[in-house]
Image (tube, rainbow, N blue to C red):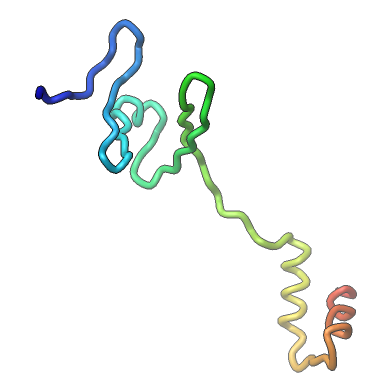
Length: 97
């Protein structure tokens, strides 16, 4: 059995690679360079009618709170010694912030 290597299919313009036994594929260097894909890059796969679209993604952390909520949290944290007898009182306090 001959060793199969990556090569360019000149008639189609496709770059061919092999899927490993673990389902992994090496993205060819020229594609990584063109799309600025490196170690730790996040890739999205979208099934299409005639194949799979592979898109590098830029993921940015999202703040779980709005600016308004952060202001309320800050006020609550500064309300030293404030205690409530029940959750209703606490909710009323927060709603007035």
